[in-house]
Length: 160
Ligand SMILES: Cc1cc2nc3c(=O)[nH]c(=O)nc-3n(C[C@H](O)[C@H](O)[C@H](O)COP(=O)(O)O)c2cc1C
Image 1 (cartoon, rainbow, N blue to C red):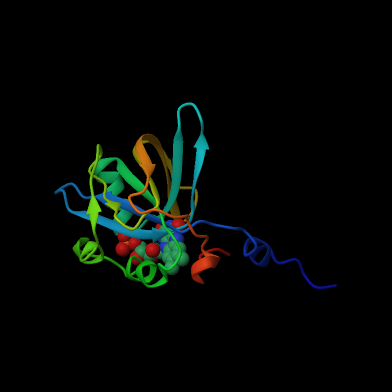
Image 2 (cartoon, helix red, strand yellow):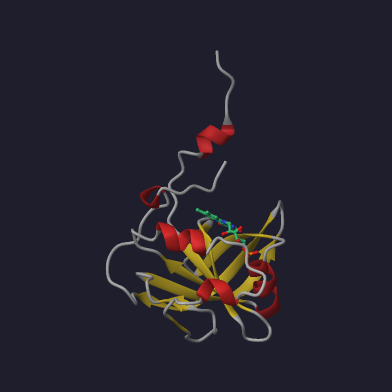
């Protein structure tokens, strides 16, 4: 009998492709590819995201207490990889990307087919990622039309 493999089990999970927008204390905006995010409450409406604790994005969210979640469409494999490149300045990843800001200042990508923006109400660091819980203070469909993709739909994975 083969040994049980939790990592292989987790590989069957279905994720959406997200881009997490954040803003530094000096106002510099950034955006990072992610998939470990989900709604966790109706009332209040809360969205959570798990972010590598030593990442630029985590320090931005800790500094300003806000983030955005961009729901990405298909055909964005290359953009997702660009938004994965480790960012030190924060400027590089948004360069050439159409984006807008709303209530929180966290960027919403023009290519997104839906978005929410959140103010952090709690966080926890049980492992190597920090889980931020954000109250949803804004959001809509768009700016682009179409459906959101899954991670498998853009041939990427981040789980195990
Ligand atoms: C498909 C994919 C999904 C990812 N999902 C997450 C995630 O949910 N959380 C996370 O912290 N990093 C995730 N990453 C890694 C980050 O995008 C990457 O490490 C990023 O450069 C770190 O951010 P920083 O530049 O803000 O330090 C993912 C990477 C890929 C390719």
